[in-house]
Image (cartoon, rainbow, N blue to C red; front, side, top):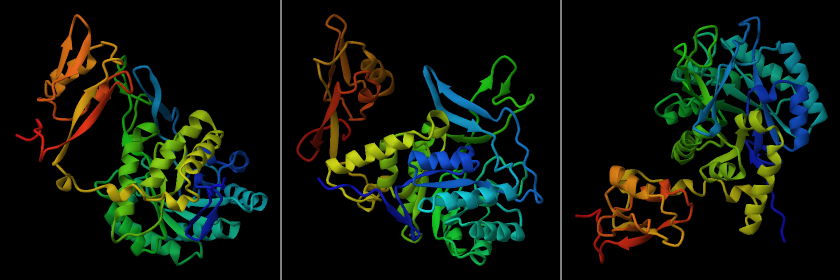
Length: 412
């Protein structure tokens, strides 16, 4: 049996696997990053560097609030975390030591300046310390000053300008980390490319409110009686991340490699991002919950999938599903589907009947005596709501109908 190769070239930098820590609390200093490298992560995007003489970072507290839904815990995580609050000298020393001790691992220095001199200085210091690449943080949604973070990422001219400033002052590959708190990411990504960006990282966290304390009428996290609209991450944002990554990959003009971020917990999540155009994959929230050890499952799961299908390299996966995304105006309406319920697997709960009656096309009959559901194919429009609400995973399936030869309720 051939062995799969999980290595990937990203902007000319060879990565032993596509799995990276994203710039966040999980890569805050050398001791943490060393443990991540030892666990098997291919690379780290170090927590965003700052020049404290330009702006001293002081974190609020409490700075986190987990989003739980019904009995499911930690569906997502809201944070009020900013960039590093450690001084630049200590961070640069940590980067030097990490590259000395782990020369084959990839270390990306994430930087955020507040003026041209800051960006230039941070880029040069990172390169001198041995960083393999730079990530420009144009996207942190909760910076405690109003001329930084996602506000810069929404300013097209600023994105082009600061990218250009960095590119003129470094020999390292540069990727721009962009905000999802924008209607369309393609124009701002193009602005980063115009400034010389070699790659795009997306997405950063989505601005959100996760909860409200109904006893004192205060949104959470409650920071001394107040809260804010801050960054939301975790499994709940994965669909948003997949959308932006696929759009970036499919852009006919951008054509830059993508470092994909957003809700990656399992090897299946990782595979989804690869298939939609990501080349490297950054993780934070899952690490905060489960620890660095999840990389073992990511590597094993992806490797097993590739072995089963005789896929030998990551390049064979990148973007393979993205080309199947089309505009809704181009959807085929000739071929429709009809739901099918397996009588032997039906547990008689009636949920499909209720949902179809009140939210579908009233195409399910329910026998209250036998407690069995049945599809009225003459009314079924193939929305598959019944499949999605059924508590038995494989009870509801569907068949395809060619409407040129058969009648279907979706076409009058």
